Image 1 (cartoon, helix red, strand yellow):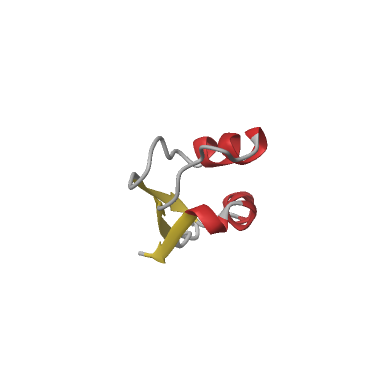
Image 2 (cartoon, helix red, strand yellow; image 1 turned 60 degrees about the vertical axis):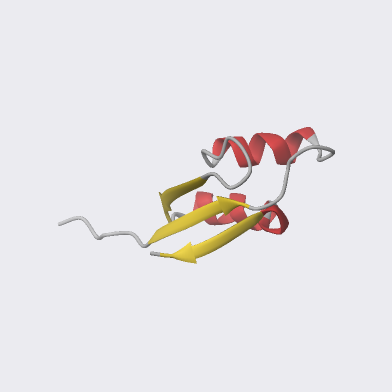
Length: 63
């Protein structure tokens, strides 16, 4: 039986303009396209690491 992962709601609250290409790529890989865009993702260790790298650009909420 599969264990259900916790879901996170991620919103881009700051622009990626004037950020490094690596940060732009990380925000894009999380599924965020522009400011105030929100996505829901599962809280896997990989996603948590990506969020940690660009947390200054995001708002993260537990669902």
